[in-house]
Length: 96
Image (cartoon, rainbow, N blue to C red; front, side):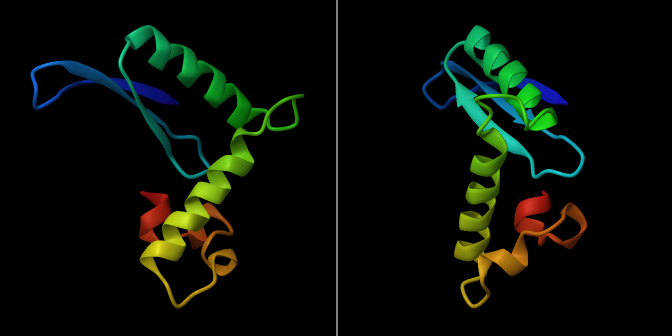
């Protein structure tokens, strides 16, 4: 499920922070200048996560790559493959 939050920046302007959480996958986040862009991205990304076999859907592999890179940075001694397997086996840096 996607959530869009309006965030106040230090310069007084606003941005829109989107977080998508779907059971069995790591959370995906992005920040946008306009709410319409945030909502459109959230709908497209959530659909791609829920239906990864649809044509043109490359979001899930990108999420896995991003998670592996984040874990490799936080756990430098361990290979990323062993860190990102299932949601229950993920370390705190991925499962959020």
